[in-house]
Image (cartoon, rainbow, N blue to C red; front, side):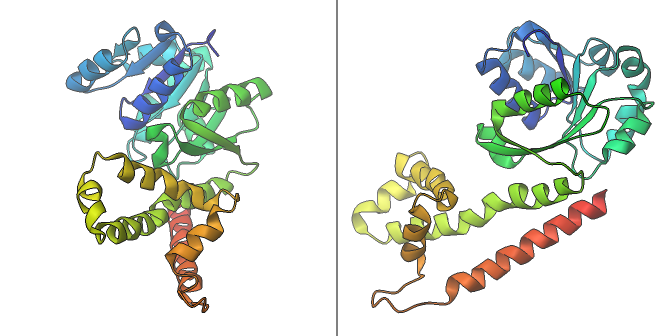
Length: 270
């Protein structure tokens, strides 16, 4: 990976997270380029990512890229892609996109066709390098390019290859919305702890390790190491007399409805 230039179009939070993860993994900063229209944001990126090449010229950055990662809002992606058409047709880089709902065939058409396109759907925990990213590659993408794309996204968490582009909508629904479903459980646990006089002050302190452990601990619910059962018992699957409760099946239905809704939303965007 370190032998290739990786360029980002858009210098927002996800670009920053991926860039920091790559640099922490040993990627040479001089081989990283970022194009960002905001002068203030360029200044911040230059400070946070020393040694990288920060620019406001999309075409110049794209022309130097072996891998071009599109990290802009879906609504502006068509205009951005069309503006990069000449540059990418000259250099034929691997093109990656993290824009939700925009199909690889559309990106390919906007950029003139004949390109290796990889769609990536990271989730919010990627900002903490604890994410899960779904990855789909079109038929023009070589095995080496698939591997390269996965290595880039591995800098911010786990990577899941999907065989069909439609599966990205399911990844969007599950990995994108899934972390939010653990939050109410974590909040209820914190509220329960605040009811104990000795814990109240510590739990109220946003910077205290107990609170951070609770956040991270939410991720243990689905590990399959037995913690799921313990969490279920704690949260009310059984009451103190061991009587079976019906709360969790009801919540499961709510979660499933939310995921289904998010998947339909992703399909409509596309």
